[in-house]
Amino acid sequence: MGLTTQQLISWKQQGRPIVALTAWDYAFAQLLDKAGVDIILVGDSLAMVALGYETTLPVTLDEMLYHAAAVRRGVKRALVVCDLPFLSYQESISQAIHAAGRVLKETGVQGVKLEGGHPASLETVARLSDIGIPVMGHVGLTPQSVHRLGYRQQGNTEAEAERILSEAIALSEAGAFAVVLEHIPANLARIITTKLPIPTIGIGAGGDCDGQVLVTADLLGLSEKKPPFAKSYLNLREIVIGAVNDFSQEVRERKFPESDQL
Image 1: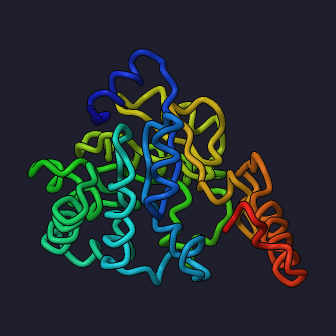
Image 2: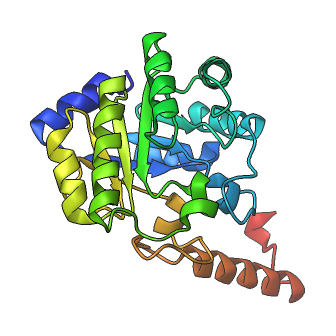
């Protein structure tokens, strides 16, 4: 039996930290699930780590559906959540319902994530929640707003901090089951976490959030460059390049295949 949104909320009440990572294909999803990750996010960060774009903006809903379906096939336990990409939900509530409905129907994931806590977003979250589509919110640094906000830390002024706190509370009241807090001061994340009855999932938001998420490519050292708040637990780029170099050398020297590989 897979995890549910209610299970995550009960873990917040129990003080049990929540582990979240991103995935973009079956192979990585299967590995993350076997390792016991609680939430697997099919983040629109795949635009950059899997598709080679410079920002998350170009990825389409159809591309997200393709990757989310592959991820879902690799998961037995974790809760799988898919980002709604840029301009797949901002035009109208009906557009958001159609996009989110496609995600759940065509991929089998258990929830969607959308960015921002402004009034239009809140109305969308409330409507999606009302019709049974679980929604994860996202405040602070919101990558779909890169051309307005850049990639700098958010919430450093009193006005910014108050806005982010208000947005997080409003998302909870609108029916979100969790909220991602990205690249905000740790003290602000602590306050939000204390005030919300739903889990906060931090990324560059200090250690007091109810859970933590990283882009898996950053964790594994696959990214060409990673944000300052990410941690690489190994350098998989170096390992893969080294293995391919070894293979290439053996082929060129006619050492591969050996007799036991025939």
